[in-house]
Image 1: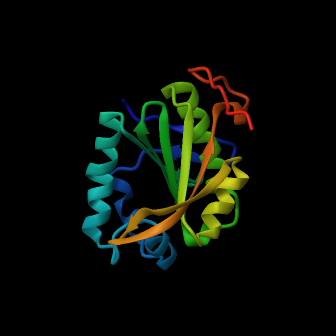
Image 2: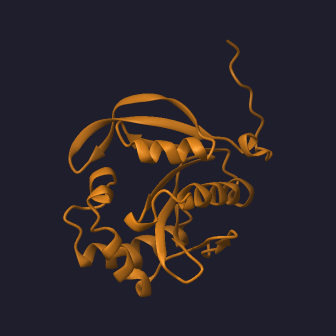
Image 3: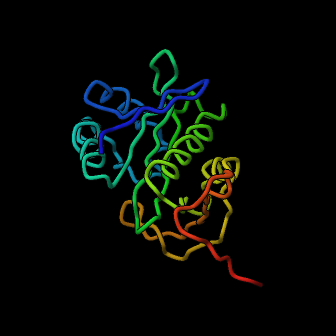
Length: 189
């Protein structure tokens, strides 16, 4: 799949490439990003170049991971968001915000925009969000974006060689007023 660019009133979501390597490297020096995400720690320049020059373009080319840099109109990097296909009709969202742009709603806005796109253009019927238990800022973004928090999974994430419990939530097309590609029959209580 060819990369796409998505826009909102405040943001430009576009793929990242070699020209963004320095901005990604600088942002990933933040201890919060290194603590709560699976980026390597310490985060070295070669990690950033591998991300922007190989991982991101390969994900788009294979149609397996759709990574968007979250940019302000002036071109400043405000965050990163990826939608990774996990199984038939299911994607997982992951995101981070740069330290200086947290708390402004940019990642929530980007998440909603990217989820609308994957529901309507890729045919995904469920987007899952997972975060290590204790990552309250990530959970707040997911909840503001309309994700239903479904529970806690034991030993479900591996972060830098340590298995940890995680929260899991989901967003369905119907949560955004969109149709699904397949019928959905919820369980009755």
